[in-house]
Image (cartoon, rainbow, N blue to C red; front, side):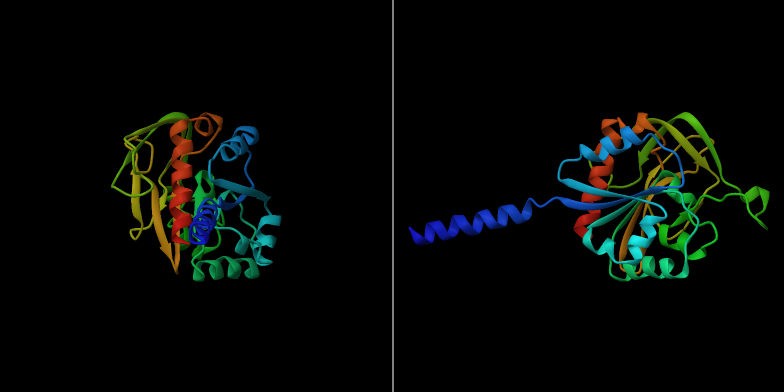
Length: 236
């Protein structure tokens, strides 16, 4: 009887440890968004809990080591001010293997920090001193975006083409070293619109769609984000 009780006690402990939610540090700031629907999106993710941080306080928290308490960092910010200490903190997290998920307009963050482009795997190029006109990225709201899976991958698993009424980015810069996950066939969109990148020991995913409530309320988009977060959490 004691052995049976011990067995079930161990089973219960293992079960509980396996049921622990993935902890997400959710970072916004620098760009308006549909806040109610966005946070509802994360509220409804089974097996995932999050804490929200807004810029510039989010970067200060990263410097103070707050990110160590989370399994995955999810960025929905569009921020440019960053100190040398904050840059070093980002790089240190990648040396520790902390996984990052970047969404939508976060591709336009840190225009003057060259290493950020290598970290995320691409760049939305805005107007700036010395930036040639033909290198500027473009956008168009309220179009049908078709996310076409490029390969079999834990992020794309179970998906055919995902159809979203969203925003497209064109003429973005995407590193040749990334692993493409989804492509678009829209004539004004960059071809690769989602990818996995590796920087130091970190796995990094970028997903381009995610402009407003219409995507946030899409079951496919919700499933895609949850699937991506769970994949990244397993790599940590």
